[in-house]
Image (cartoon, rainbow, N blue to C red):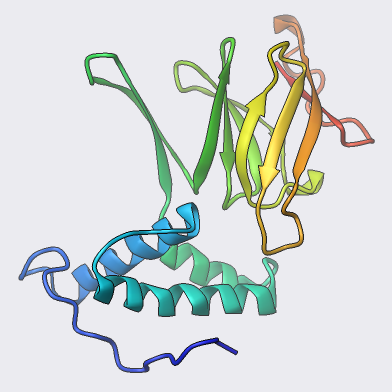
Length: 202
């Protein structure tokens, strides 16, 4: 059950995206707020926006806890309310070099010629080049990655740390051995070892 009184009639929100935005503008604004609340766990805006967003967010969390991430209807609902995120690389002068769209990128880390991205919605760690080209997914749901929030690498580059968040009893930090392959062996080793403690970067 929800822990607060949920109003079945929607509140009137003025000037969501201008006077001509209509109901679509209201939904778009609420999607942005719900996504931001899930991503950053805290938002600051007008009280009526916050109070209305809380109802949708709490209901979405309640359904997710009840049905889990294997329920097609629940995942369809999450896809509707949670917007895709983007990684934008810009020059020192503010010019956009490249843009990559992911489900919900939460943490990034650069080491050498590699960009590591934690995608909270897809439950994985992806690797890109510094030019924005996708290389591979080195950790995923099969490696017990759940809602990754932060990804970082130690100074020597041989340890990958992933911090995860609730509510799936996974509020912890996992450490993986990071191994680099030679350029001529890009496609030879694609999977993690049986212990699940090492991941390979081409």
